[in-house]
Image (cartoon, rainbow, N blue to C red; front, side):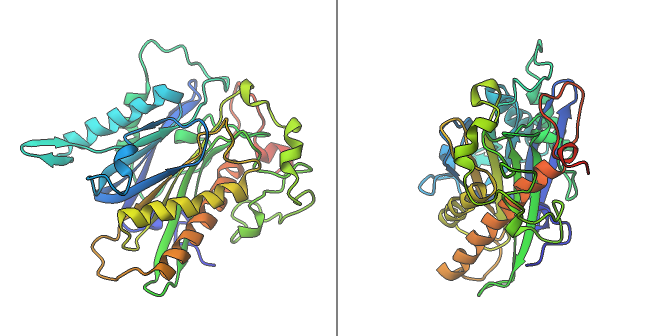
Length: 338
């Protein structure tokens, strides 16, 4: 397996990612955008999602493309980050044309990080301005870990974070690039019960999250070790992600890619898709200008690549997390002594 040049979702041509966060707030927002609208759909498997404008991403709905996607902390307050991104897009002359009017389309999803030790006693909701700032910071290169929507994220044992990964595949109609972006904040654990090895270890490329291998305790008994995790009612939860490709996918095929990518969550987090999580994956294609016809075998390979990228991105999010004052959980690297 081969990563893209940056090993980030922005290896998919045309995409940019921007982040903004508040250190005292211990929260932030992340935006995925492009110079032109892109095809998108979504699939939700968690029991407690928080979303904005996701209904329009169903394959049977009229809108064919969106202007940006937002991942944010802040629980329902964080959905206002989408409004900030809308404002910025509108100022740039972007938006879905309805007569003389323009309406930027910015679906989003949030995670719960209100109990992570940050100062949440704001007078005005900060997430609209965080969305604007994240959009202004959009670039092909961005940091991972405690940044953007991953700033205050937590897992069952250690801090979560923002992660990304990419892969280049030689499909029947390819080659194509596939990438993932995730804010990992699950009830479950990204590491095995008996140590600090990642559940995603079998899919690691070039020691991108430490190269420790599978290690002991990776026999799949994590569900029955849940008593070792921080209780869900004591903190926030949810893993929200975007998978993307430059392959020419229809809206329905983007949905199928998002469905397949959920396997990446289940391979990297144990347990996953719980009643306490709002696990959600957006599927994105920037390849609408390509003339290649994508058949089911190519879609099969792209879905598998999306799942692998998402597993790796989740592990990278935790691996890259940084400590901060007032943290309620340690970072992975402090647990390992790295």
